[in-house]
Image (tube, helix red, strand yellow):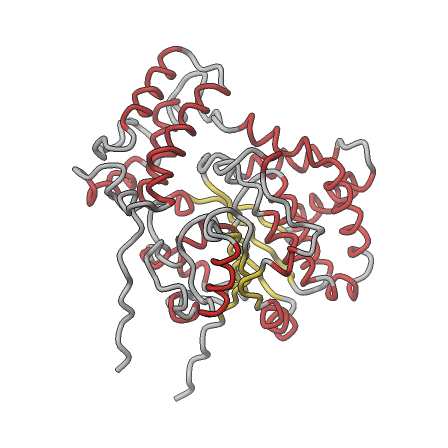
Length: 407
């Protein structure tokens, strides 16, 4: 009988000298302070945000104080195991999601009043696209060419995956858009891949097309555009008949994408001065109208659980997919339990619980990764001591569950 996988301990803010520790002690207070700075909140909200700021990093985890919020019961269940722990001592994956939910509690996101459903990170998200007008037009022109030629779209799949992967460098919880590393259009696109299993994913799509593809979105802004261009290419190539785009149910991680962010991006493309983005927006809207591109959100993508611990229903929904594409660092951390795995642990072994073929596109911004070769680890670590967290290195990893054996 196969032995159950033993999951290592989770990353915590008490791990000495770790990026998690730096996040809890430095990044999170800065994010809360910035939320005050960029918004014109009334004094009562700023007071609550300052109180949250002062809890970090050694204040206690407490239940939410957000009466009537639609996710209140769920969150109090998720919080219960960590009551009495501190922001630093609780598992990092839990505490990070809890932080963003506490920001919404402080800003009255779910409460009646002037800040009801007001995204406290909207200004940062909107500004993140402004420096990218030329890149937006270039991506749109290439997408429009592919839309007229399925053969070109199929041949360009590796390029589309790279574009979507490195779009993940634009992460507003890490750095401002103008200071993010940029590998797109450089030799670093491939040179900085630690794992590249594009060929296996490409072969899988060739074998099953046309397929249902599910994409777990990460950041709004330029990365979301890169993801929409990938979706457009999958549809143009005939690889997908339907793409389900999974988005967050409420603001989190500063720049994570909501359905509202997709609609705003499409509006900006439709009103661009260049005709190429306008044509791309028209085509994407037609995909939505025809049901080929489906926008969906769920509190499950805002929850503090590793994916292994998801309830049965979300797993059953993902099991309907022919390919799930997971974008970004937070989704990767969730997939691999945000745990202290040896970096050489086989990727397929860690995600063997996953119910569908899985492709991950992730730039490294946390000290957790699996599926690497020992020699590659040594080579990269000697060149770049910050390789695990600085967003300069990426992985394209593919897993396909074994087919059931017929009796």
